[in-house]
View 1 (spheres, helix red, strand yellow):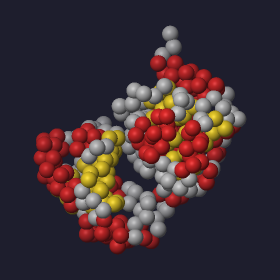
View 2 (spheres, helix red, strand yellow):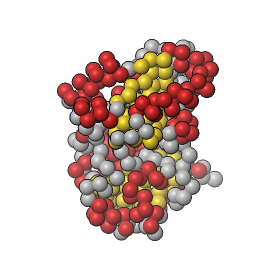
View 3 (cartoon, helix red, strand yellow):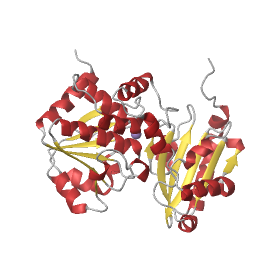
View 4 (cartoon, protein in one colour):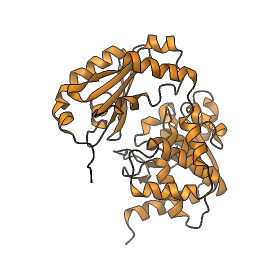
Length: 347
Ligand SMILES: [Mn+2]
């Protein structure tokens, strides 16, 4: 009896085999894993002579613009008609790095209207039941790890090249914060296999993590100096940026990336939160946690979002301060859990 994983891989690979035009759609507001896994898979499908395109709601952060074929990504916000045509004419749609279809953004109605089968490759909890094919496990570090495992299992003789490896390794690096969290032993196995292609991890690490602009460093300085709040009783730290501050600082997309991690890097802090009022009266909230304290349930219940146990996000209609007020209102119910949590085990 083949197990569920083998069946999934067989079904997905038959669907790919049967299709000529394939569209890969990462989630809106894409990160390193969304783009890395999509481009990695796209490179593979090009090798298999498929007419394959990556189509995304909005543009990817600048620090991954060096990835091979990055410039061929079609962005809905700037080129609607091309994106709509590609989705309309697709024989197969593969959604990468999200489990709920609405996360493909404004492409959703076109995806829903398309008669093409829909597959999902992802590691977020609670997959939407409306997909036709699933390659999904929340145990994986990243969707890029799953794309590697899919190709490895579906096409055993396939020789990974540097282009695919750079894309997938980028997803591994960004989703694990340089191999610090969301790890399992397979993650290191996949990383090792990708490195065997001869990619330079020094190059990738430096491109991705040493990509500060002076503007961004000033923002970090300002955020840490002026905006960092520590709630010792709740082992929680947060940073907020209001719409006015955003404007004044001239923030660009990607500038606030990783800011939330400074909160979590404080000794004994269990939860870190970043509030960003990106549009007037609309605040994005990013939550991070350590150990068994789950932030995805908070974002799902109160901020219309979701995510992983230790990394989640959502949105709130209101200013940064109003969102903070809402957060402070719900925080006391987590006090016991936050104060009793032990981070990892020393053994
Ligand atoms: Mn991911």
